Length: 480
Ligand SMILES: [Zn+2]
Image (cartoon, rainbow, N blue to C red; front, side, top):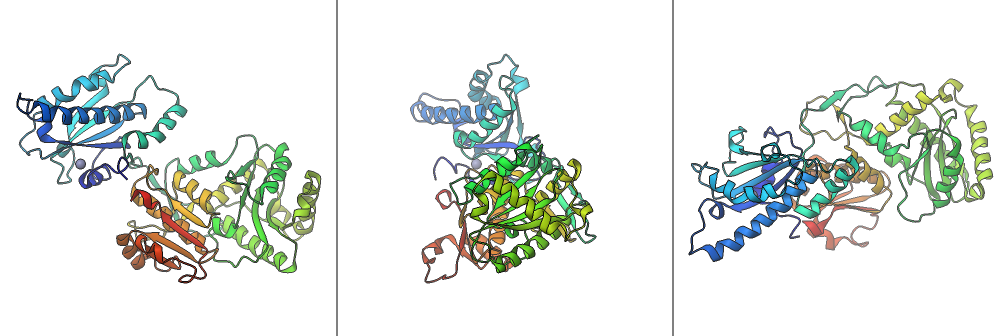
């Protein structure tokens, strides 16, 4: 789609090149024909070149102000057709400096706002002779962090494709606290897990997560939980179609009649695993027992706390009033706590937080680690990937929007694979990708999902050709 994808192939490579030692995570590109810049305007070509030059200045203005408002960044100026010997900045400065000066409204010096460097002099990577980097500092007049974040989000639409590089050298591999001696080490960005935790939890209050998006049959369940947890300072209630899917458990067959599943942690109360069902039946009772055992084992892997949980079924009758709901939770507690060690059930504030962290880690971990050491390693999804995963995982048709993703393409690939892999646990899934990626995935991950198809095969997807398919995961094709 024009206006979204405006970088040339080389620019796309350059902004994503890990060998470029650049601190600025926020990057934009602009293509300018060198002939527009490196010759002064003569009378003859004034008419033709003048409009082209003005258009480019307008684009440059937009992009530089986007970077200033977003807290600073790097503009990759691609001077197309520049000869390798032409390293004089004079004409370029003449062309852009007036405009750049106008963008400083806060009295800061030009030299404190902009730095120009030749990219080829600062990297060992080949092929960047035509690039000038314009490093842009933030505008101090925009200071509130919240506003900056908003601006950052809108930069993509204001200024074409924005590339967010994860900050360099902050990736760490840690031994996660665990009850299992076999848990591989976990690779993550520093501070990443805290970011996920802050996003999910509400300080001093129960958090009911993920936020529900549309009206669902679980609406009333959300309400009852919110009222029930009102008096607790902290805690998490995670409501989903399938805990097995979000917790990355081995594939389970979910019986008919299960509407929602809940993981409920509160300080001073036993943790609960609840299944909201159409009506209570024996097979559903066995199902929630099996689910609880597996979920508890999975959560134990990500904490060294001694942990167990009570479990049970809820039906629409139990949700008729807040009192009935509180009563049924109490009776679930009484019935199944006899089966667990009391020590494992007891909770104080610290343990409550540790159990929530363990739950979130189990959700956020993916075992897809490519291009790293040969030792098995788990990897934490980024906060954005975590949100996209959790907020999409209950849908049947999941579209990963590449255009609005502020992350590099590789990241949305990981996310698509992860969403498809999890959904496959709930039922047969089609992963729809571009032709070249299809070949790569079929070689490496053929077993993760029922079908991997190229996007142009979408027309062949019908109930006749794929009778059992329950989910489709695709990139947003509009923007390809
Ligand atoms: Zn370019």
